Image (cartoon, rainbow, N blue to C red):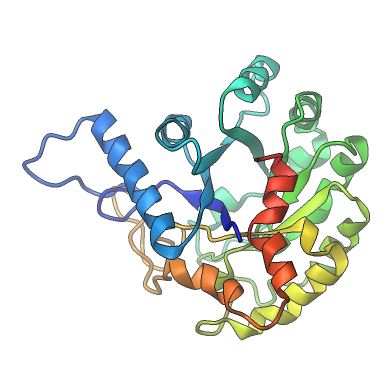
Length: 301
């Protein structure tokens, strides 16, 4: 069985988002980027992942694909308001290993930094600000990942308008770790399940160690996963670890150079093995979720 991680982030020397470089060493930006690519490659090798999708800056994405074209693919986020958005996306489509784009529907960028802040859908969604972003994605056959947290159902209008465009709802369609997590992350799950009526909508099963309130193997998440699998089928559900997000977060105050390590650091292996070695689903389901679905959704050989 080929195992594909549907979402990892760029590792850094030292482990944090903006980790310090070794003192007394001359490390050029090019060498640092190469080292970070090696850290990503070593990470997937260590846990037994064959391929991975990277969510990072353009330079790192392209470097990873350049060094390991058979191991990495990439997702890029574009400025939906850019006047040359179509030209950018057309050029992106032509680059090797560039597989999909992503959009954020919420204020999560602010919420995860501010204690007490509440997650909310961005007014830009209702204003139609993302319409051309999706339209160009459909035109150039570029799938779209949607970071919607508990507002995945807001993507319904785009699923209807662009039935031939694959749309992947991130993180089970629920809110990930924040300074003050909601009392019920799964309150809007019925609205997500209703999205199964659109055959071009997929769900990313991502971040189980962070969402779970229990230790490995995270049994408390399975009742929700079963509902998602029942609605969408395993052929429209794909696994992702969210490495390195499991290693840094907002549980401790942010430092001057980025976010420090999580106080509840989560091993990369746990994100995979909780699915790979579970008896909750069949071997056939695992083959879809751990690799088959993402190849289908992103047309990735």
